[in-house]
Amino acid sequence: MLTTLLLSAFLGLSQAPLLPDIEEGIKGYVPTAEAVAAKEQFRDEKFGVFIHWGVYSMLAQGEWVMYNEKVPYETYSTYPGGFYPSRFDARQWVRQIKASGAKYITITSRHHDGFSMFATKASPYNVMDATPWHRDPIKELADACHAEGIGLNFYYSLLDWGRDDYPRGDGNPKADYAHYLDFMCEQITELLTNYGPIGCIWFDGDWAKIKKPEEGQPLKVDFDWGYERIYKLIHTLQPSCLVANNHHRVPIPGEDIQIFERDIPGENESGYSRTSHVSQDLALETCKTLNDNWGYNLRDPKWKTVPDLLRTLVSIAGRNANLLLNVGPGPDGTIPEGSVTRLAEMGEWMAINGESIYGTRATMLKPQPWGVLTHKEGKIFLHVLEMPENGTITLPFTLKVKKGAVKAFADGTVLPFKKGKTDFTVQVPQDADCSIDYIIEINL
Image 1 (cartoon, rainbow, N blue to C red):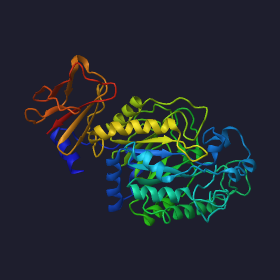
Image 2 (cartoon, one colour):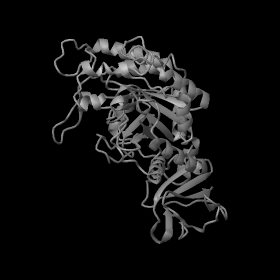
Image 3 (cartoon, rainbow, N blue to C red):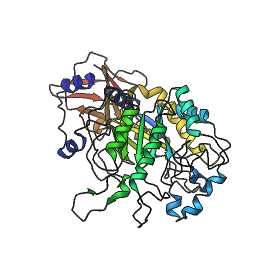
Image 4 (tube, helix red, strand yellow):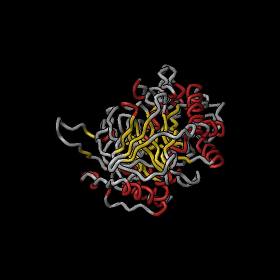
């Protein structure tokens, strides 16, 4: 963005060079003009909601229940016969999510259990054909999203715990990856043909084919998923549709978004990330849970507090990334009350403070002990998450501003500042409430 470049130059900051292995990861892919515009819009949105929903919700033990409880596929594959979410209302979902301030939804179209939550001709193991419900919730959700102005993305699992043609590594003689790849491409074509404009295809499961390296040795990927074919198909069917892949390593050609599972970009706080590198060319997204699980789990009361969720959102925005916050609807088709109330409270805060989040970018100034910085055309926002020492914030650059240009965002109170030759100092009021985010607005 021109604004970002101008501000970086004004602040005396230079664009940091990409690390060599990141350059190796992204060279060779030239995004279309539509993809470039979509990527910038994605960066503007800052906040989305993840939905993990499938047959596994019936067992109320999370989306990995088949694997964790060692349920035989022959048994698990009969469960769709009892799947009947009678209270599902796509419009209500979208309105609840829109009320949170989220700008897009990413929903599991097919998870690792292999069950397709959409109408597909590629396999009878889907919500329309294998359940007594006989409805396509993805179509209903797509229609609701388009009506409410909410973006829609599809999560899609690369691995499958049940199909014979998926090479699970268990010596299955029927394994045939070429056939499985054809199946995936047929489903991706359906997803990008039958549901209107889609913002992103969000892949997961690549890590299943990565062998754990020996101590001190680099990561080696010895399986060809056919990404060149898959990514080209996506960009051909919908040129503005972005590609994300939760593979926990450096991005590869064709990808538009770098994902950090349970991680703040650059910090391996969850242990999932195999690389600490953060791409400066790709959009960034952190996915996190509201409690401890992605899929519906009755035995998970570990709900995060609204202040903690908002501070996470602010912290991630200050790192130039989006937050994708998960909900796991129950088997009746409703979003749990614990999720709904937290999303609503987040929405109330975003309705007041969203200007300092939406459409902003981070500068090259790294996160500070006191918090983070975001900016947009003509404005800088200091997000004070911790009271700084002596109540003073010192920025390592100087700014040209007029009298009264530094204010408390909440009520417009003018704050004292001092311009130095190489720095800029702002005084934070002693009674500033930093329990969530004390925002200071600087008008350039």
